Image (cartoon, rainbow, N blue to C red; front, side):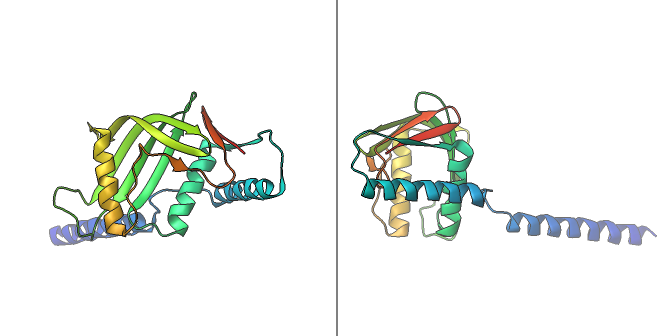
Length: 195
């Protein structure tokens, strides 16, 4: 009798752990709405088409909600089978302020021992945009729950670029916006893209 209870408990625990592991492996790292992601893609295509066809000088804008933006980013990470960056998520606030989360997966990579296999960074800052370019002015940066200097992120981005055999980038550098977009304005829960 005692042995039957032990075996039953053992199989329940093993079965439960097995089901948990299977459900964790089948979950995407970042959930998203495909419809919302495709909406953003259509908006970007519309902006590009209008830029090619129009000669107007006055700026128009499109509004993308925080949820749509995050769905678009997650969709791109998924579809492009991003190998290292597994999640990028933003929280949008007024006056171009943002907060975000980035998850890097370095498992199975030839990296130095001081890097964790899974790195989660949280950041806060301000988007600065002008003349079709933008950059992130990082105010706060955390590795898990430990504050770190923004230069550490640039170092990490450099290492990741070397792993992926791409050109290193820096968050403090200006980056060209998608074709046709002239400016970005961040408000609470939404981003306005001017074209």
